Length: 426
Image (cartoon, rainbow, N blue to C red):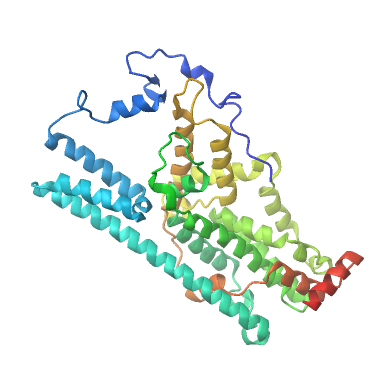
C-alpha cells in the first residue's frame, strides 16, 4: 500500500506551516496564538500558564479551584480510563481526590461518582479481555480437532448463515464491539517514540500496552483467513464458487452499511494466492460485483476511492436520524497508517524549540473522529450462533490454505508442484 503523504500542502519540509507563526508574542509569555488558537509555545511557558506557583495562581481558594480540578479529573477518567490501570496512576488519583473531598460533602459525592464510573469501565475492560482469551483458547482447541478429526466439525459458513445481509450485520456487531474497547491512548502507545518532548524517564506509560488495538488488527487478519478457508475447504468446484459469490454479496452489504473494515478483510481474503489461483472455480463466478468492490478499495492514488466513500459515510453519519445511518467503521490499518505518517512526518517541536501544537491538534482531530465512530451502538439483532462461528471457527494457516488449494485444483507449474510435494510431506 502506498504511504500516506505527510500533509505536504499544510506543512513545509520542516513539518510546520510557516504562515501561522508570524503573529507577535503579544505578552503571552512565550505562547503564540493565531486567531485565538494556541499554535506553539515552549513547554516551560505552557506549564507556567496552567500550573499555580508561589508567584502565580489562578485562585488560591480551594473552593474556587477544586471544581476545576474535579472537572479535569472527570474528563481524564472518562476519556482516558485505561491510564488508570497503572497502579501508580490510581494511587496518585486517590491521593489527590482524597485531599479535594476532605471536609466537603459536595466534592466527596462527586469524587465517589467519578471513581465508581472509572472502576466500572476498568472492570468491563478486564471482562472483555478475559472473554477474548477464552475465544482464542476455543479457536486453538477447535483447530486441533480439525487437524486430527476433520469430519468432526466439517461445517461451513453457508450451513450457519445463507443470507449475506444477516452475515454483514453480525460482522458489524463484532467490529463495533471491538472498536468500543480501543482507548484513544492506545494510538499514542502504539505510535509514540520514547522521550518525544522531555527527558522524564519516570513516565507512567512505561508498561502500557495497546492490547485492544492489537486485538482489533488480529480480528481483521482472522476474518481474511476465515474467508480464504471457507473458499478453499469445499471439495466440489461448484460449492467453492457458491461460497465466493456469497462473500461477494456479504462484502457489498458491508459497504452499504458503512463497515469498511470487514469489507476490506473479505476482499483481502479473496485475493490471497491460494484463492486467486483457483482459476476453474473463478470461471464459474459472476465477478462483476466483485470488480466494483475492488475498485472502491483500490489502493492507487492513496486509496482515493475509499477515502471518497468514507467521507460520504461520515457525512451521512453526521446528519443521521437513526443508529443504522450513523455506522462508520473505517479500514483500520489505513487509519493507523495515516496517524503514523502524520506523527512521523511532522516534528514535535518547531525550529525555535516550541511545541508544535498544530501537529497535535491534527492528531487529536483524527483520533477524536474515530472516538465518535466507536460510540455508535449496533442497531442489528444479535445472532449468537453466527457470532460464535465467526469468532471461533478454525481457520487454516497459509500452508494449509495452499495445500487445500492444490488438492482442489492441481499445481500448474514446477514451482507449485515442488511446494505441493513439500506441504504433503509435513
